[in-house]
Length: 262
Figure (cartoon, rainbow, N blue to C red):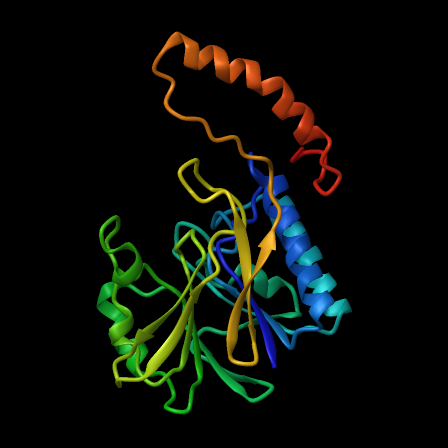
């Protein structure tokens, strides 16, 4: 059994359109190379609730590729500021299967999905998870991960029954063990965003593979990123400017990236 997860792809027509499109191409290639049993998107897959055609066409091309490889695709939705609409944008493609409040079996693993929930509704929905569920796919701000920087809706200690949790919303890749509501040990994973959405986010990006009960990070290439320390003195600015031409030459020589990202 192998399942590939990603989240927070923010398919869009804005400044990062080339980044989001290239990430989807790589995710489809990872899935095809490993002949996975399913690919699952854990919310915020589309950047905005209202769109021009380009981001939807891009995502449909991704779904076409999975369909060609005979790989099922399941998804949930994130916050209303991004892809939470009724009907879901991805329902326009017959290969995309909406997982919200549904249990499906992939090989021997029983999966259950939940769209983003408010703090008022989260526990009610968690307690409604079927008792034989193995893995929860969700999109939440968890106190365990973002309690100091955001207003979380809940904590992993509230999650009953399941042995695995894959959650979108945290734009960083994390794989660790937590204890659930029933005292069960859970492996929890955040795929992280598929490309940089803000300058203070990690420069490295991943999707995650659940293969024989173990999570593995699979890298996603993105545009080159140059980190520089604080520019305090005139000398610091001069040094940065002197380094940029070589950095641009090196970036433009990258044959593994589309031209827009080079």
